[in-house]
Image (cartoon, rainbow, N blue to C red; front, side):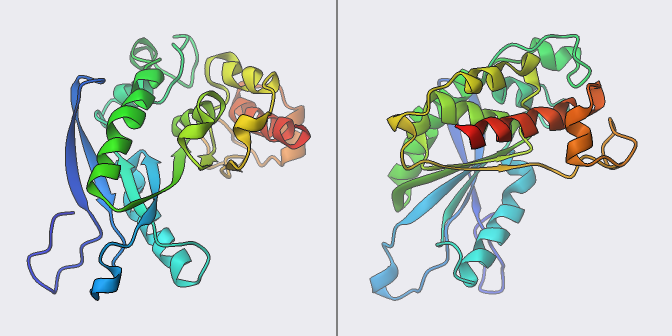
Length: 252
């Protein structure tokens, strides 16, 4: 993802580094800017922005999907900002950034190292709000519309941001969010949340992955959603929490 050397190169984005004072570390950022007509009329055209968690894993796919959806008229061209994790090998810093509260060390979904390093979500979102978004707005032609996308613990971050600071983004995409995290603390909070004017004109897409079959390490047999909701074992805890979240949102 570097600048092309000649017209034969296929380039979908470039890499920036931001020295974050909030996180006290260097953060790499992946940025895709839509191709525009070279005519002068289009040189300063502004675009909405997608902020994508786990950007190192999903940047290429999301850019490709948005380009395809735009081509068939289902969404506008969009700037994509991928936010990679800083420690891909251990996952400790991913857990640090994408968890809103300190984890209990005895949960089988999270190891001791991740639990010790967890709970840095507030700092991470402060980095996005006070350093990353201003950087993007200063260096690129952006519209006010911002979308926030995350999956698993990233989906948990998306949901927590929607509840805590809904004004930060226009739309939220939570894919298979880890609502089981920390004894479902965020899920319980959402149950008691008053949906008032601060959520006006906000959009949420809540997705669930197909983890009810043998593809998931915790589930060995085929289960449908009705069976999952009746189950009380650890193997369905992740899915049950998302289904419960969906139910809460539909009622509210």
